[in-house]
Length: 329
Image (cartoon, rainbow, N blue to C red; front, top):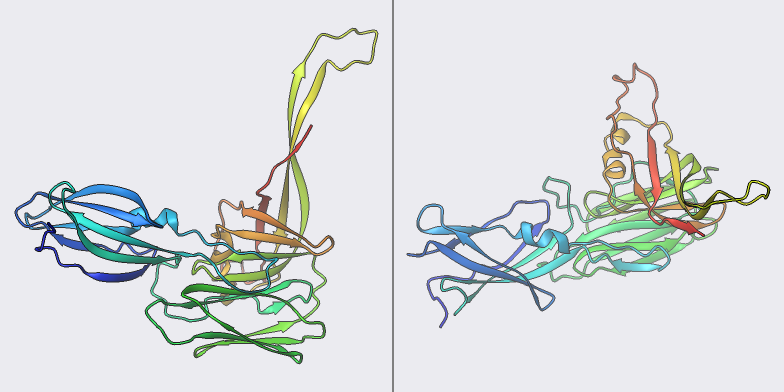
């Protein structure tokens, strides 16, 4: 028999950065059991204890944060739902799960901005000049509680317009830039974003997920290097021969890049946290057209301004590392 003293709270939608909590009445009990179901599987079961003799608290972020994992495929053109959300069904019990009540449906979506944001377009580029050799990406957000049709409209000047219908939570359009394009306008709801298309003559384009879960790009100068790790075995040798005494049986190669931004204004500099804090990034090498999954490996950075740089123009250096190690035997 269900515990009728516990009233379901319905659906609660929240950004994953927020330490949201729900209050569960405990009645005469010292604790309430609760469990989370995600994708038809129970992923967590535990107990929350009363703090004042009548209620306890559930913090969904603590359970759900590992299940909000954004994705992007830069080789698939069109609109993509970034899988940057998850839904958990939560039940509670006051008798050690002999019986239990449906309590809440939590819907968490990717957003680590640590501030409230209701923008539809969640791309926030540092520079709005892009290179015709790169992919074009733009992201927008649609909440599940809004059942009206919402679109992203992308106009490539002067070649044409495409309209994409969004599905709930985060959506990203990936497109080739048509030959001859000089500009791109994006609209979604009341939000607008405008880009200039220009050959930059720079060697790299970095695609990175910003703190809202949207995708942005940045065309960069830079250089590539490699870090090698040798694994050797030692054997006896005859010094009258040309045998090796120490032999490499495995060399492990990691590609690295030191990337440099154009000169930035203070307004543009404030957005550099979206690059340097990013947990998901790809690097396109224009000469080879490789698109490489990379990790941003800059461990410490200064927030630069015109004033703290002694009234001089400034750039940022971004360290990037290939997420895949090459084994050479």
